Length: 249
Figure 1 (cartoon, rainbow, N blue to C red):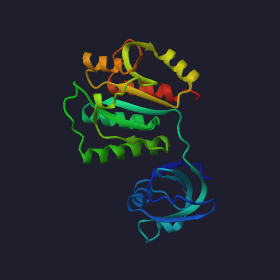
Figure 2 (cartoon, helix red, strand yellow):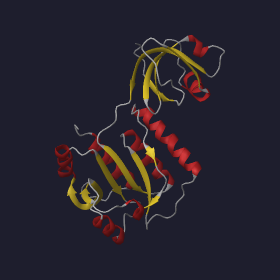
Figure 3 (spheres, one colour):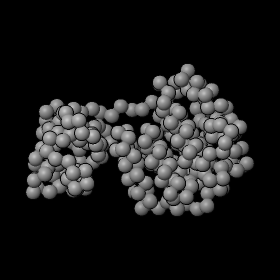
Figure 4 (spheres, rainbow, N blue to C red):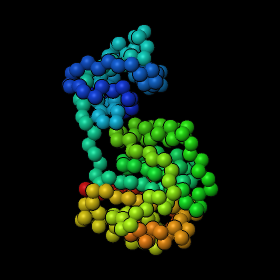
């Protein structure tokens, strides 16, 4: 295999059944443009193609670079079904301003979360997410997965009110707050308990208000501290999720 950088690109058209040395040929105009005009790959270069269920390492052949535009063709070097990350992590994050939330979506996707729900809380200025924004945020998720070679795009859920996601006696659910349990202690618990699922609540700009903090406590959500500083929403997500995904479980 070539020593050149191995790119990973997402496509819904990647064949879901294949085998080593099989010839893969399919049409994808956007992917073809990225391969030939943006990345400027050539015949013999290798590329990881992935969809929602599997990843395929392909050696591109000359057909991809012929006059048959939009056709990707190559020979399968290896393939695998996606391995599920454990534990599953469900992120409930207060909706911030657009730029900050796009950064959150990118970070969470890099770190392999299972689902992301934008929360509408009392300190959220407005719900700016439309159907068009959901499409854009999903594209940001895919870009993050490609960059990180994290092949499991998360489920992006529509915005919900905090009260609509809380249930009584929530298990393995945590909220970031400076007065909570030290992060190291929280991580030790996760390693020992090995839960199948984790849920994290992170407030928007300005955090959760007193009433919302009471709702979280009444639902059994435990507090975890990321240090003495009050972090931005996107920084809190990066610190906590990065810490959890670093654990050997």
